[in-house]
Image (cartoon, rainbow, N blue to C red; front, side, top):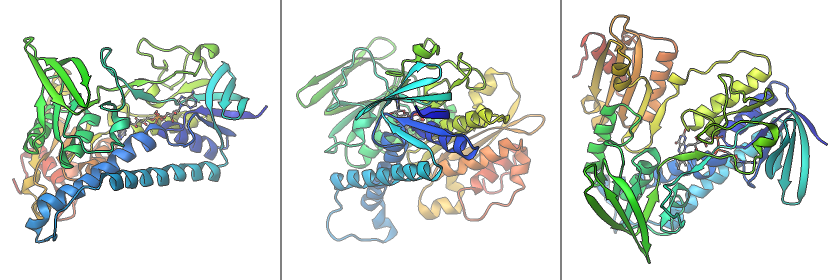
Length: 467
Ligand code: FAD
């Protein structure tokens, strides 16, 4: 029987990063993945393929709507070749998962393909294609991730009533895509198909889209997406989804119980994701799950069984790839006797629509609720030369700082390239910068990053220069 210092179940961004860090720290490491490819949700049916389609559809939209103004004439009609778009997406995914394979062999990690299930707290059975194998591990990290969730009355037929997984490989552009759920995944994929020519209607239970983010971001993104002709039914509770041939009919009630009926040809159910522990046989090791089906962990990501840890989407917290990665690193370092720490307040959240939305730290709503005295500085993207040069003028950067100490408490932004710009907010907050610290740093001109400096100037003493 093969013996390991650590076995990791699941090869998503949590699992494979944990494996690399364990190997770097000198542990004999096994990685178990039930699918033939490594990389988990993020690389195969999540972050990477969705961004590939967002990028392709963005190019198409630019060609159709903006090239002429830039002085670029295309003879003939610009057309979508969805088959090629999906094939390119797959090529990007394949390249990325191969990269993970390479990293595993480079770091001398033993990879097992098969469903991993606990026999007891130190033995894992692996059900491989060619038979069963048991390995022994001093420590195990559960990194089994999540799956799309649904509503109890919805039957996901994977043809027309679909989850994000199917939405990443459609064979045609929907005529009318109904998106249930105005969260990150629904809005990103909704925007992909809107750009490619579909009508898109979003039905959201809450009174705003991206409900966990700062209210100002929800408002601005709604405004911009409405301009892009996406329809929104906010404060609507979906009560039925019915398939009739190629038609999908969604019925929903508003807050007063007034019913609306929406007819489309595809319905994307994006109401969140649920932790995945099927087949893991956690009970054989004595590992406890919480009432939401997540593996219960303490602040060291340790389960109730001392040599078993859990990370990523399968435990509490934001379901984000970079959160899973940080947790993978943290557990590896804990196992090596180090004292790592994650500041969950500084895990950024990003929506890769265009304009992009990004956030770190406390929202204005949270600061109000917590009774923290704060000041806010906001700067519009349209006031930047760089934004006008590229015609990406929607959005703003907002910085929230402590009223008395000026420490940055939250950075919220919507606009071009905000997914990358938010790193400045994270860095500033990690080093406990004040708004004035950011405002006194030189930001290259012309860049979108100048909006961060200007918002910091606005927060410091209402000193924005170009507003
Ligand atoms: P996963 O990536 O889900 O990996 C778990 C792995 O465990 C899977 O490969 C699974 O097959 C394997 N497994 C499960 N059970 C077993 C078992 N018993 N034995 C062996 N193997 C097993 N996050 C971002 O940060 N940025 C984004 O842009 C982003 N975009 C997304 C877009 C979409 C459409 C979706 C669906 C998600 C997106 N996410 C994004 C979320 C991100 O994908 C997840 O947060 C991330 O993948 C979680 O990583 P993980 O390692 O916890 O689990």
